[in-house]
Length: 229
Image (cartoon, rainbow, N blue to C red; front, top):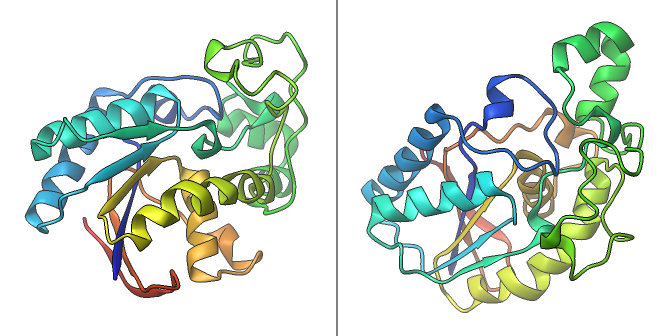
């Protein structure tokens, strides 16, 4: 039986400001740093010792993983980072205040963009203030692969190959595997693991800094799930 631990990064500065973040690189807030440390303490109290770590390429997951591992005294662990674990790309909504966006476009449209499974926001214009297609961390995949917008269904499509090729084999090998990622990339993985429907996933929230621990069998079916809080 393999152990998979999912941790959403601690509160970011734009979480604090209630802004759509997506692929834009934002650091943790002081509260987010403490959430990351607390996640490490929770894992330690539960007797869980990660052996391999996966994160996105965004600073808020990188720093969350570092702080968590420092708390566990396991900062030496190998860490693999990949853009397929990035947050959902919020397109033209990136950087906007969520409350102002809802007021401008109405509750129904706001919810469809934010929580709908298959409704992407308007695409980001090339060369805009938050366009990351030229960011060196994506040089290996080419600017044409960097999305201009995404819905959760798109995140599932781009995340699952990485799960199947890199993360799942570690779990199947019996290693305690830690994934530090984002609200939507983790929702995509939770949807896959638990067989959650397209309709039901809209109501699933992954809290910041609270480890979700899965025990998986040799077919990667969920045998047990715990949330450490």
